[in-house]
Image (cartoon, rainbow, N blue to C red):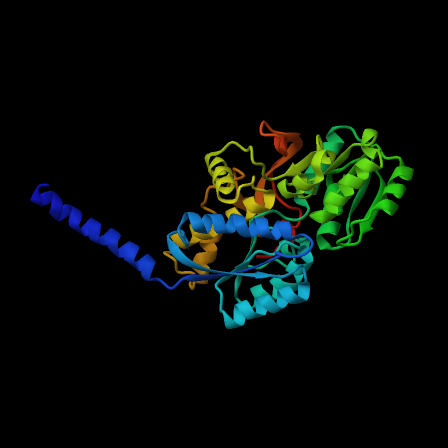
Length: 392
């Protein structure tokens, strides 16, 4: 190589080396993950964890080129335990970022105190209405959705399809109430019954008898995790699917659920902001990498865990890993300069997503696996109804 080229390249090589060395030498960014890894609903937390860890593993223990110290704790779907873990993470471990909570009642027990203390919280799932509206915070970002969104899309879809008399049910907790509120916001027909079940309930004999007596022309339900598995099986066993079509959000027709429900979910229409067949490079890479790493197709929850990690990576890269400068780091998070697996993604004023909500159908793919395929867009670049109440 000519000497003049060597002299020109030397400062560039040195600069690049210093940047790499700085990233290596930097103190790890501390991330605390509180999620459900045991008991009812554990499959949701496991998928969030695995999606997040995939992003970290792809960068060999880093995000955005900066080392990560990821601490993971099981909340066992217990609000009190989740709060204890959050206190330990923020006070003893002094984490920079918290994430991971699946359930809205746990989020409401944990997030307000965490954000008030000055710690950043990035939600990969729960999006209760209070945190999107009057309870919004500069330290709170939701990378998944606001609770009502997928239900609003299904309300719109059933109205468009001409259903006039729909029976609706959900668990009696914040996300369940948000679900039916969201559905009714966009559904224009009659509600023949509105039922709130116990959280964690698995026997729906009473609800199914009431539903049958109401004689609806369709049923919309939100029952995540094991609740949805039980309901789907019992609905089919009761012979109701023969005459009364069933609809719901992705939470009741996601990959982990379908593995347990079998054909009782085949052909059911559901709503989601993500699907494994969304045709963009980020999603294709994610689906392939997740399947290779874990031996299964990713779920909605896994995609949200992955996007949460990639969002953090984008902010770390933009701020040279300086998470301590919270104003700059929050600004970088708000810009959301990462390739989301769901396609177009941006934050609204309340730091919840503005995004497309799809309609999917459960089918059996060429490998014989039950999964979902997108059949249309229900709501284009949709923002939640609570953003106007957020005064940030």
